[in-house]
Amino acid sequence: MLKRPVAAKSVAAAQAATLRVGGLTSLTSIDFPGRLAAVVYAQGCPWRCGYCHNPGLLDATTPAALDWSQVLAFLDKRRGLLDGVVFSGGEPTLQTALPAAVREVRAMGFQTALHTGGMYPERLSALLPLLDWVGLDIKGPLQRYDAITGAPGSGDKAWASLRRLLASGVAYECRTTWHAGLFSAVELLALADALAALGVAHWALQECRAPGAAAWELSAAQVLALEQRFAVFTLRRG
Image 1: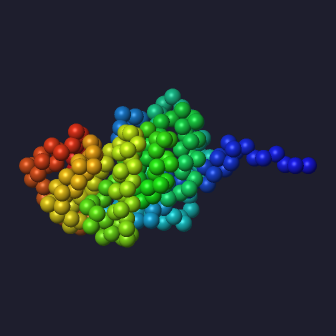
Image 2: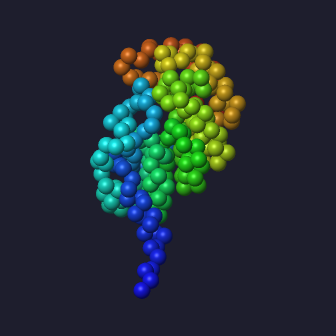
Image 3: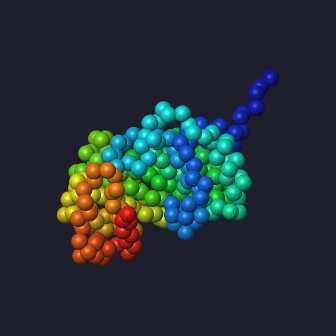
């Protein structure tokens, strides 16, 4: 007797079930603009930024903190209470299970968002039709990327992802975490010019608060100059 082919839905569910979840935030109002959301933290990241705020999620081989089935059970109880789900990390696009997981969440009626460093442009392109919002980290000018991330060629990948995101029409925020030890204020202003020239309309500048970070050096006039380059500019300090 011939076996029946496995249903596509079952295959997708099986793939989503392999997502390695490093943690879950049950409620946030700041990670997905305009929505009440939960945050699913994906385990693993190929970059090693010195100021990473989730270092426990870097090692892709660390056992999952939660099974994907537990995440789905949690979300099922939050239907009608949450607007959306954010996939963060680590780096969510590192995992090939991510698209299937996003589809399952959307099928439950939730809007979906992604936080990413943009290290996999092709994977991001495939995900964009499934997303309502993207937070894309731009680490710095191209010439500073390798030093910041510890990964050769990382800047080209991130900027390629930025171009794909801008072309997609998906709502987004580009954000840069900065202190003067990473690159100078002059380079920061040049970075703002480069982003604006590409068509970035929403940029957030975040003060790096990591131990040993250089003191904040931007003057009020420099902040104003940055603000004038973008339709939406957000400064996050403290």
